[in-house]
Image (cartoon, rainbow, N blue to C red; front, side):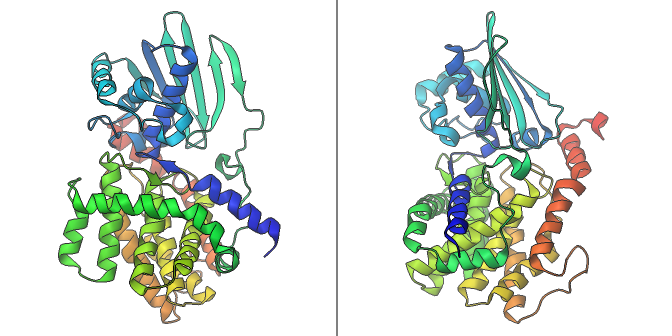
Amino acid sequence: MSMNYEKQIYQILEEELVPAKGCTEPIAIAFASAKAREILGSIPEKIIVSASGNLIKNIRCVTVPNTGNLVGIEAAAIAGMIGGDSSLDLEVISNINNDDLQTINQYILKKMVKTTLLDTNLNLHFTLKAIRNNDFVTIEIQNLHTNIVKIIKNNQIIFEKDDIKKDYFGVETDRSFLTIEGIVDFANHTDYKKLKSILSRQIRDNMAIAEKGINGQFGVEIGKTILKHDKTIFGKIKAYTAAASEARMSGCSLPVITNSGSGNQGIASSIPVIIYADYLGVSGEKMLRALVLSNLLTIYQKGYIGRLSAFCGAISATVSSGATITYLEGGSVEQVKMSITNALANVSGVVCDGAKPSCASKIVTGLEASFLGHHIAMENKQYNPLSGILKDSADDTITAVGKMASEGMKDTDRVILALMLENKDML
């Protein structure tokens, strides 16, 4: 493993494993709103959000943390406007207090936020225009949740990126060099002390919200239900992972370390691995190596799918954590690949119909498929290549799933959004 290869992977991990409080799509709106208010210098009288369909889909049904269970774009924009601090990035509304909350509710009554559908080919793309008297500020974000590409104040461009990258969905580091074998090699041989510095917060924060979800009252309390009916280690994994997602989607204010722009992906990439490593009693070093493997496998898959799509991103993460269980059990590189192939043969068609508490159920579905894929792989068996969209290699299958998700499911995305908005004109 070359030093340059290792350096690139660490750059990727730094880009993709970032903290967020709340679902990242509404938090992106809150971030832009806070930034606009800071530049405007005062509270605006009106906010206009023009967003891509995928953003609207992922914000419509999710609770914005620290807002007293408010939901949607309006709540996110006003929360960022009143109590946001853009320097905190995806933790922008962490410091909202009770006085802020009263003010937020007062502004909600003013109906000052207008939302429109943005005509764009990008899945993650929006503009937020904050207006007060004759002054206005427009923030434009593309591809990454905090990736501001342009700021306009009173018709003057005061900031513009001149090298907007559309390859790799706006991220800075090329990941075309990634392969399953290369990722496993990195996980096996990199300095685990570096891994500890990068992954310690993911372990702490993601397990904390899992405990909160199990012990609290969120949504339908899916974690408690699973624990009641499934006493196995796999039942515990499903319960804690789903409980973390349900708490997050229901507005829990605890932070999560995300993966590829998604808290649910960060949760599903990490919690199963942490719990299973503890169950096996492996060393802390082995657990860290497994955790970086799972995270990188998710990043690898999402590099072909994109930040947002009609394909459920949490499925990619569960496929990764299932393959990592194979790794923890001493499986070979080939068996890790088999686990991925077997799982994708099962759940490569699960659609994303927006962020919401029931995402936790889809995570459970993905984990069940990944466990099955793991068990089959440990028997040195996998589904035949060239059946369905499976290819000769697991790497090529990942590429095929990415193409299906990013290109083939565009019409699916359009129909899902139309159904969610009850817009017959879009059907």
